[in-house]
Image (cartoon, rainbow, N blue to C red; front, side, top):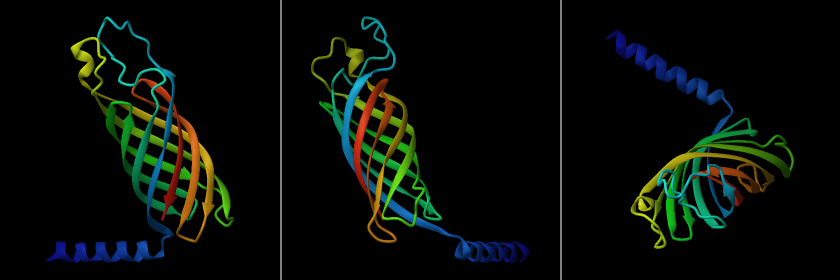
Length: 181
């Protein structure tokens, strides 16, 4: 009997505390163009280790959906999944997303963002030199971004951001537009 009372008390406390907190669930969708700048790790191509799945000057697009929480209208923290599409190379990414929009009472505000996670691509290029280059490749994903947020309504924001993306042993520059609701 006691475990039921403790469980009911815990649920009641959580409901009371969540009712008084200033936390809102939020969803973001964003898409953008990704420009390839260079590679992080140079390895002898005859070695076969660390085959580059994204070639030099190979640009792409991405599409991300992120679910998270807004804290006091300034901080956003969430988890996301994304599609990565480069020329004949496709993949996905899983990441955590953090954003700060410091000016919550103005229509326009700067924003700072950080993404940390994992990306996985399938190398389907026809110009591979050896069979090991056709294998799947998963690597870290780190992105630091800055941008401009337009607050259309209290719960709707549109933003444009750019930054530096490190993934697939490549250095990339994303230019994204997104909507937060």
